[in-house]
Image (cartoon, rainbow, N blue to C red; front, side):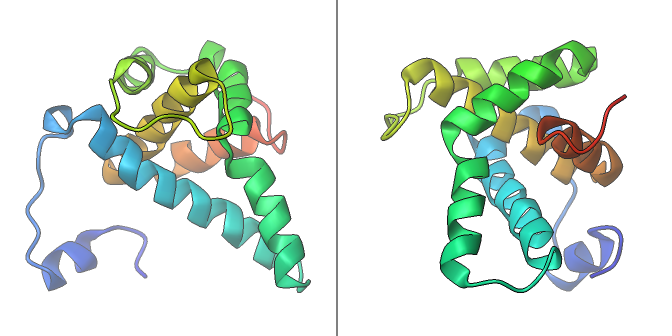
Length: 141
C-alpha cells in the first residue's frame, strides 16, 4: 500500500470528508481496527512464533485496560486538537458495555481508539505511530 490513502480512495471512489463531522464512535470503530493492526504488525515483525503466543501478546496490548493506561501516559503530550478528539471519544455514549473492563477504562479506551481513528483518517501516520510507541514504552519525546 502506498504511504497515503490516495490510491485506496481513488480505487473505491471515496470522497474526503471533514473529520470533525464523524461521530466519535465512528472514529473509535476504525481506530480499534487500525490500532490492532499496528500491534499485530509489530508482533509479527518481531519474529515468527506460535499464533497463540501472538494472540496473547496482542490481547494484552489491545484490551481496554491497556489502552486506558496508555492514554493516561499520553495525555500530557497530546495537542489541543488531539485532546478534543480523545475527550469526544471518551465522553461518547455507547450502547455496548465493557465486558472485561471497568466503565472508566472502557471509556478512556474508546477515547484512545477515537484518537487513533482520527489520526489514521487524517493520514497523520507519523504522529499515530509515535503515540503508539510512547504508549507501549518504545519511544519518548
